[in-house]
Image 1 (cartoon, rainbow, N blue to C red):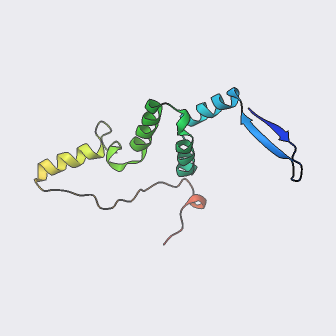
Image 2 (cartoon, one colour):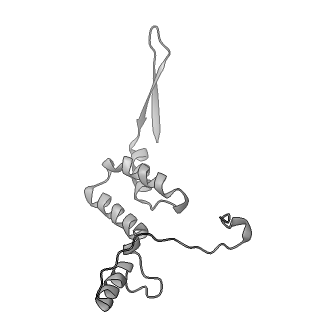
Image 3 (tube, rainbow, N blue to C red):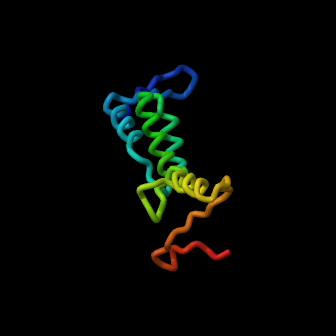
Length: 122
């Protein structure tokens, strides 16, 4: 996947020149298209964006859209009715109440399967 050549220099240490092979580029391309794992999401996502120049514009936009749909609150499915998004629920509430509603802050709750993985109490 990666090859290198050693280039000897007169008064300096030998220099290694690395080259990504076609097989290596294909493997990199496939790994960039795969969804990043959640525990390291931001790091993996930034790595994907750093290497995005080898993807087509359509693939980059698709990748960004999938990221937004998973992580932007208003694009997520509403928990009690998964046929609508949080934005649609907010719009329905605004039209029903007749007042403007703004979400300033939200907290993501989770269920810990055991006490050892529970977050520390504040």
